[in-house]
Image 1 (cartoon, one colour):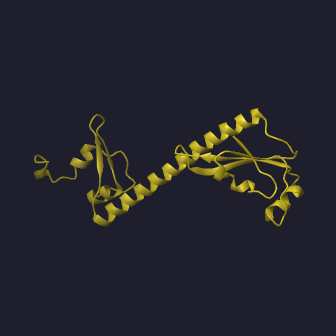
Image 2: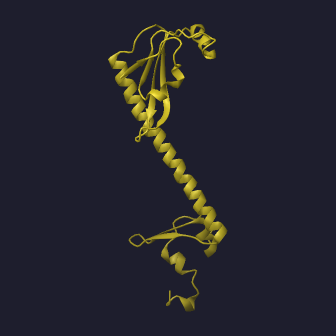
Image 3: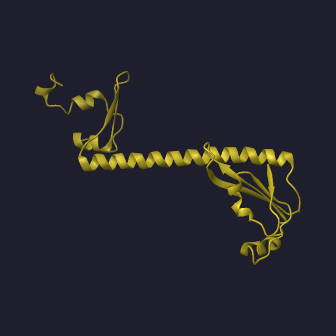
Length: 166
């Protein structure tokens, strides 16, 4: 579905509420209606095509807009390219947001472990490699930047008389 913006209607920058392409093949805004619109002729811009970047749940993540020096409609080929770009952009934005949420979650966990003096660890029995949180390393006296800890490293921290019980 295509929505065409006519003079005196909603501006191109508000197109995300339409959840579809917004096409303005011939800018006709007055500076009184849209303060930025007076820049368009100065820049030689005559048309705009804009589409929202939607998440997998249909939430608007942003907008991709293309401008033309000629007053014209978008072609089917150009529309397909824009659809591919908006799809790729949605993947990038959602992934970046997920990565940021994970970083925040990990930071909260690390802070909680630091405050409570508790750590966490995982042991890959097949390789013998241990993965320790910074607080776990601190508790056992290892440098926080030490990598590649093994079960033998852990066992070395146990008092010799207690090793058989551990």
